[in-house]
Length: 174
Image (tube, rainbow, N blue to C red):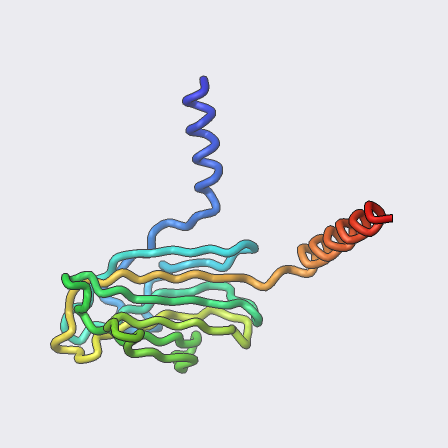
């Protein structure tokens, strides 16, 4: 019975987590991208997947339902040892394909990373391509996380709780 309850508890804890991001080919066209990706939730959410860049490939991953004020973090990590290949270019684009943010290299790494404060509600896409589309091929890990703005009800509950704690501390000092 304990094993069953432990399994059930771990299953319930895992439910908020999304499935792994999946590379769907061909996905070189933003408007033909399969609806795989990550969906905004009321709590922070993150997902990761291993993708493969082929010659002249561009990978798009949908990021659904973002709200102005959300923070999106996107990172690519080269997977070919010594983990510096393929050299990736990373961008966040809106639903019309307009580039919102771009990064080529992260420090000494040939991986890329973005942290973007979303200014308008909507769906967005992570766009990954090789720096040299014919040469930079191979596997890379893609990580996407969304930190949502607190919904008004959540912010109100948090504020009320903080006020209650402050009131208790004041009363305890008196």
